[in-house]
Length: 135
Image (spheres, rainbow, N blue to C red):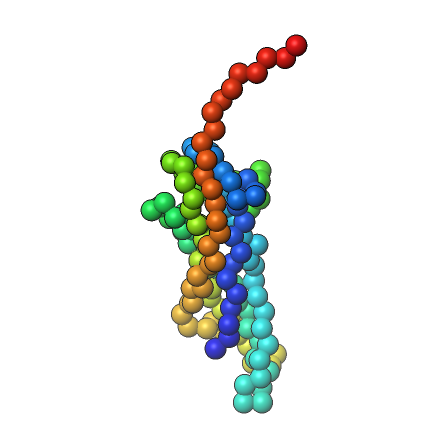
């Protein structure tokens, strides 16, 4: 058993605020992990890869992707909140792995594991348009 880190959720716009009916961008920087352990005197190398990401937007809606999303301007994973309030979105990451003993062939590790992400605070606010004249 190896502990795996949760994915860090990054939200754009930054600073913990977004607007109602605005395409809020979500992504994580979680990529492939490698671990080396000794088992029965043998060197065992593991490649642990994110297989999918479950996006929990904390308003009753979710999405699942194989993409970790990406920063603006790509907008791979977006969500529009329909009402103002404070939410705590998170991303759960499901990992799969392959291993090899010594310099042997890579073999799949049976199954997968899902690591729940840490929620982040996000204030969803309404904006009132104001017409401003220039002199």
